[in-house]
Structure formats: C-alpha cells, structure tokens
Image (cartoon, rainbow, N blue to C red; front, side, top):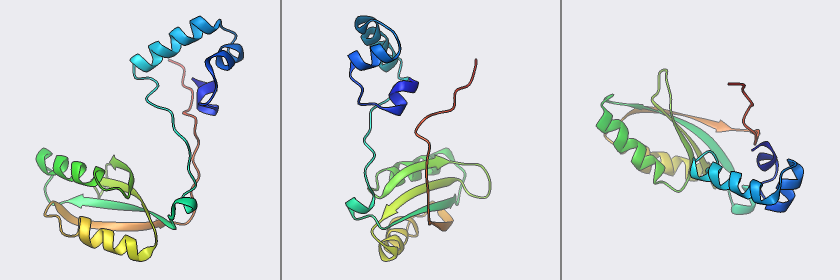
Length: 144
C-alpha cells in the first residue's frame, strides 16, 4: 500500500519487485485489496491553475435544523456541485465544511449566493479563502 501511495502508476511487475513478491502473488493481493475496498481508486494530481482555478476556499455551513433529512438533503446538494472538491461532516459551531475550487472571487460569491444562501436548510455560513495548501499523499501508518 505504501509503495502505491508513493506511485500509483507502478506496473504489477515493478510493484512485485519493489515489495519482494512474485508478480502473480502481487496481483492476487492487489485484487484482494480492491475487492475489500482498501484501495478505493487511482488518481492523477492535476494543476489547479492549468484548469483555470485561481481560488480555493473552505465554506463552513450551519444547518437550521439538525434533522437527518435536512442534513442528507444538504449533503446531496453540495456534493452534486462541480466546484466542490471535498465535503466533511464536522463537530463544533458548524455542521458541514466544504472545500471548493473557483475561477476567482466573483465565482465564489456567485456560488455562495446561488448554491448556499438560497437553501432553506442553511442557517448561516462562513467562508475562508485558502492562500496556500499542501497535503500528504500517504496516510499515516498505525500499528493495530
């Protein structure tokens, strides 16, 4: 898993050599990991600027009601919006935290006004513009 987190483009033969395993055994293990949904996908990291994205932000949303139906309607609505990169259900003063990608500040304003402010489920929201971000591509290793 660690080798794939570093480079998901490794061929089965390269991966087998890297972890000191026969290619057939490596392939069988990979299939097991995929079937068990331990490996959920393979992704390419794309330049935001190359795609016309000039701004990223976090939008915290507080719901008017903490009913399961309101929460599920908002979750479904927000996840369907193409600007949304990630959505988290969080504790604290807000209920949801959305990571969004926009062309510019005007796009962000319009997104908030058209996609969030008009929703009856929304009590209030707070926006934080991301100036810089970096993420680790590997999950931490914990001993069971």
